Image 1 (cartoon, one colour):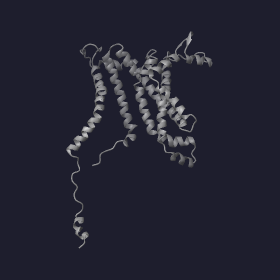
Image 2 (cartoon, rainbow, N blue to C red):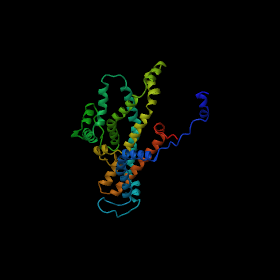
Image 3 (cartoon, rainbow, N blue to C red):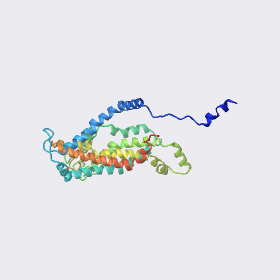
Amino acid sequence: MTALDDAGPALAAGPAPVGDRRPSTRVRLRAWGEITLFAGPAVLVYLLFVLLPVALAAYYSFFNWNGLGPLERFIGIDNYTRLLADPVFHRSVANNFFIVVMSLLIQGPLAILVALLMNRRLRFRGLLRALIFVPYVLSEVTAGIAWQIMLQSVPPARYGPVDTWLRMLGVENPPAWLADPNVVMWTIFGILTWKYLGLAIILMLAGLAGVPEELYEAAALDGAGWWKTQWYVTVPLLGPTIRIWAFLSIIGSLQLFDMVWIVTGGGPLHASSTMAVYMVEYGLNVTQIGYGSAVAVVLFLISLVIALFYQRFALRRDLQGAVTTGVR
């Protein structure tokens, strides 16, 4: 009888049963300890500087409080009733959504077009990319003050540099960029486009770097021209980058404050006011902390609802590949 014959019954019986592979209590405690060690500081900072201020703002919004004395005058939802009935707040919300819509309709396509052109082999391409990104590097204070000086107009004694150049080109009556209620929001949008277009272009260029060259070669073999290649190959593959940029643009437009506050202060006649500017003007500046907290809560809820809907319907396909589930 051979050794193989001796092993026959053992082989016929099949493999030995595998023991319980669940990690021991010690291993699980060690894993949770590592999670706490690495994620604990970030969670603590998030609780202290995000969730706690939101909770306190929601609490203060139910009081008529100036920020100095004790919280004694409970007024319920009166701050919210006053807020929702104020036409200045309505205009502030409309201005925020004006920036949101115009950013998506103008800044996005313009950034894609410039990125496609700069992705080609050009002389001084690195220098051009750096120059386009320079406005984004500048602080909002520096950029806002510079544009305020350039656009100021006190006719007939003095004109700002922009009006002076326009008059040299034959435009005798330039618009009052920062003083006309019908023009000021377009002026603000132009400044924001100059300031943040570079970031959008850099994001699009980063997305273009991930497009395989083989697809361009296949499109060229099929006889597709440059524009058709970009429309049918490049732009669809830029979808994840475009959606991430759009999300950042929407949230940034809803929370717009610094540039408007520096350039116009919300004027003239509240024509350029945004929700954040309204909150500071009617809350902090007049020491109505309870009312300003109500504005902050409404701004937070609007941003949160839009972010959740955008993640649910726009980013769902991008997030599916990033979420993994445990295998049992």
